[in-house]
Amino acid sequence: MTQETATPVIEVEGLVKKFGDKTVVDQFDINVPKGAIYGFLGPNGSGKTTTIRMLCGLLTPDAGSGRCLGYDILRQSDNIKEHVGYMTQKFSLYEDLTIRENLDFMARMYRVPDRKQKVDKALEELGLANRSHQQAGELSGGWKQRLALAACLLHGPDLLLLDEPTAGVDPKARRDFWDEIRRLSDAGVTVLVSTHYMDEAIQCDNIAYIAYGKKLIDGPARKIPEMVGLNTWRVEGPDLANLAADLEGSDGIEQVARFGSALHISGMDAKKLDNAVNPFRKDKRYTWTSKPAGLEEVFIHLMSGSTDNFAEKKAA
Image (tube, rainbow, N blue to C red; front, top):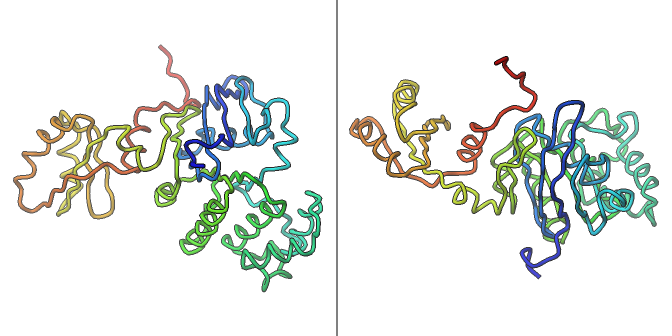
């Protein structure tokens, strides 16, 4: 059964959550296929964590409905919690307990049968066996990440909810983490992950862009740029700061962004964009290449039209 035809693991619509007079999640819909790696992409304060907590039964929506793992998110939150592994953004295990003690405690909480064997297996699979007697508080960010993931997996969840799981860890630890996530996905575990990193976003099967409580767009990661319809030129050469200043504001140019040693110039109307950059292409100091827009250009473009729901409103 393909992801497109499988019964969704998460299917919700119209989710709303308010804190005081602020709407943190506003009419949110999502449909997550079984076995997918589904990415939440958005800036801090966009409602990603609040949405995840509503999906796994830790928060009750003010409006909206839906199902997670076949259970009603409003009436069967306890059932959802039993089948979900939730890895919070902040390390939430006990720093004064050892790795093994933390895992044993979590196994008790979930009433895991054959507890010792399951803990031993988790230690081996996540590469923690040689450090099992080390206190959690002594671990680096990458090792804490492994421990947190091991704790999430002890009870064999069908769904993993990972909230900024690789924030603050080194590139190798991030790469190792994603290798493990892909292995779990291949085994049929559905993964919903929030991230700021574009190199992680491209590893997701599907992506939802979220800004200030609203979903801007979602779909298969490979199709998102095509769905948005953004066109891009890449230019390399000297004095890019002055070139960027000259390009910005030209008719047809909606976005000028620096990517390492190059500028990416984007616009929705391909003809207008070409007309805008053509005069600059005559300068032989620069190398111009037309390229498909990537996920990062799309993210910048979508965010430029979003309004912070916590920003102070100006008086009329």
